[in-house]
Figure 1 (cartoon, rainbow over the protein chains, first blue to last red):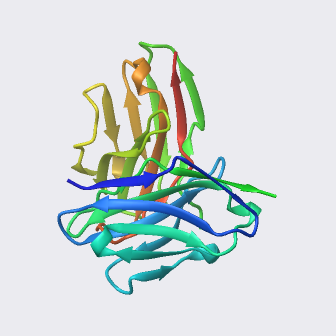
Figure 2 (figure 1 turned 45 degrees about the horizontal axis):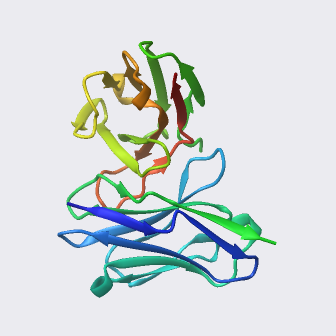
Length: 113
Length: 115
């Protein structure tokens, strides 16, 4: 069965510092992986997705994630945090041939001035 | 292009009452999904429509939940009778194509509180 684990329900960084949000997944078949972001009072918005092309995926707002099969990880990074990055981030997985998306519990990112 | 819309944004009801949530997907999207997030836990899949047909309802918690999608456009999710554990945020999503690699477009959610 598929599952997603996000390490840390809350992460706090200073403005300008590196953002690293961790995600590990389990899947019995090659997965598709996603990062979504939810800003207050808004729906989830896709940041980026991995669909078996390049292992380093670039997304919107300067975020990127690297698929590491050997570590079953898909960590999200951004070199320099901005106040506007404060939001909740969700890692998600779906499997080839399926359509369900399985989500992690979410990580809330706080950015300090 | 209008996004996925959900109504109401918030609903507070008493245990035993009935509530109906509505979702309007992006125009032209045949695929519509319902998800639920309970008490800050992970977002969980409830069901998937292709047009008006239920493709997969394996995530529906029990028979107190009824989802419909008349005419393949908007969808409703009815909870009858509501229980305390039904509280949470209900998200609707839509996509033009079905498949694991396709992005789903999410609405802002309906926050349901059962007291």
